[in-house]
Image (cartoon, rainbow, N blue to C red; front, side):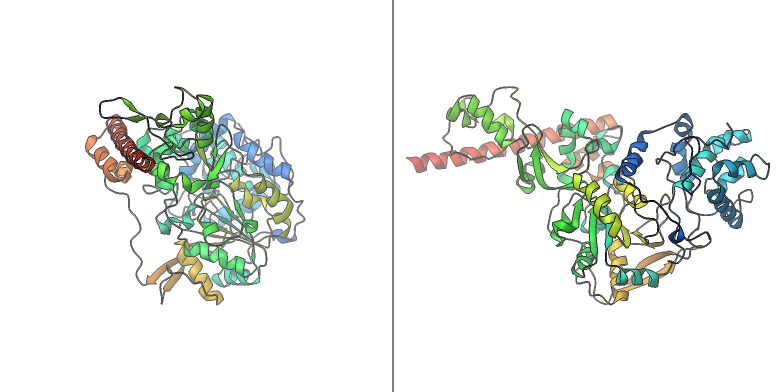
Length: 573
């Protein structure tokens, strides 16, 4: 394979294509200090044709494309890419050389670039990888130089897929000025804006939700949110659903910051990936909020489409039960004998069924084992209206983004998300590249070139921005007399690290001893921790403990129903 024919193809930065359309899967590339050093033509001076809806759809559809070269190297790129220059390696390109190679690639395109570099003998493919932030992998050590061509091809494609940074925006003062001058801000938020409330994010190592789901023995923790698996076996989702239920109406200072932008007439749209509905609790109005992944605010029967208020199901979910559709249940019971079929079955101590009178509409539980319905009756399961993997995003997402927001936005702020899940991850590259972009999170991302990175606890960052802007961010979690230290990240002119120095912040959450299983709470967690060290032992102990808890909850529900029935009988007498 010659590097002049990159696997998957690429564009040359001016829109012209090579032999094959580039896959937008190839985006996880480092940005190697282009924030300070990379000098190229300001994208604001270029005439760029705005992408259409079909182009947005193509970006997402391309996520399914794959070539043999990608299958060999793409998984390795995440580990090989480093967000820095390789100044520790004498065999790597120097920062100056890396900048020159990056500029040349964008100027002439991949085919000419390869002819002028590797094909001309100017540099080896192995060393050229380091110009694109890829450390040559150990498994290729000693191999012929053409063994690195596939990896180099992917590195170049990823580099060209990135938006070029706007070099005029670098400092905290720049960020504050953008905030104060903007009138149509898109704010894209992820789980990181809720972690200060004790709601776990998804991908943080050891403490994120996916780390806590390892004990389920799934091939991929994301299968918990796979719609196909939910339809096959909803118990997998409901075994962990109670851990992610919104437990209160509190919202974080970051939620309050977004509401402040709205109140100042600056918020165009808040695209939220969160399912906790806390943006609405903070006061973000429906006309300014797109809940890309839905929320627990409502739930719908997967069989008949009956919709209910979400928190009416919370008691059952917290009890470890699968909520069933009451409308389906009523229909089945009615078809099975009318009013007589509407009674719940009560069991006496001797095992005989006890008949009790019930008022119409009384429900103590939705467990279909407690209703007089035929064995095997098709009673629908209630599914929270959150968007599972395999389900389309709301129509409002595409329509608002492409027909309204794209032409109006004058500032983009991304907060608390690693932008790993499509199609929301495609929002930022879909927007006009000349619009300033600010990134706020604990750790930087390497597959998107933001103009200013503000790293640290989201609540601390936004409170400091408000202080510098002269805005009053009223929130109980912002301490009085807060002092925040801001430092430049080493080697960067537009990457800033925020640390609260007064009052001293609490230590960050740590993974408990025992790994993910230690995160399983209460009696169930205790049983799992004592069960043994193998996955099979832990899974068995977990299943037995859950069965015990469900049996106890069932017995409690029966006892409560019997007590209520006795009270009704006495009242009737």
